[in-house]
Image (cartoon, rainbow, N blue to C red; front, side, top):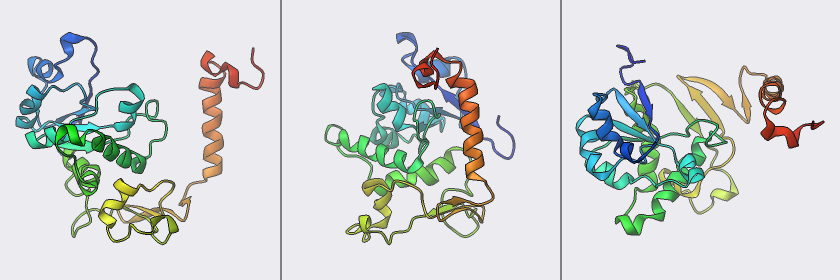
Length: 239
């Protein structure tokens, strides 16, 4: 919910229900739901003729590539939208439609999806441009200018990757492109939130990971495995 401290806090997860709602931007304007404090999740059904509407109202789109692939949907026209002035960021979407919630995987998947149509669209964002969409792009979209970049006066939110690994040989001359183009899978070396280290050397600080895993598994069993028929083949004693 928007407030004075965080005004850009309304997100719309707009799903194409029928052809009447194909023009989602037009529908939002018709009901008066437009403005810089509103941004769209996915935005795949946004029509080119609606780009100006979103740009003029500073309404952004959070691109979630994993559910796009899983659902066989349209690949977001990031070059066209950026040219029109639409703010773009990256997101993982909910765990039910991306399975891993891994932002680094999302970054590389988003870049590769854009390269797939680069010839048809006359180019695509560079790996570094995709990294900026994932960082400062997201911060700007939600009205948090103190996030998204390493600079004086900004929040010390960051992660670090140990580049002293064999798989990065040949890529170290261009670290700005490495995350999106080469891809970094698995845990990072360190994560910091507002100057506090919350993850280092494959461990969360201040969290009993083994205990948390057991608790999560118990909840999953009680809520899903023991009650949902889709999980019946995985039960220890199928009924």
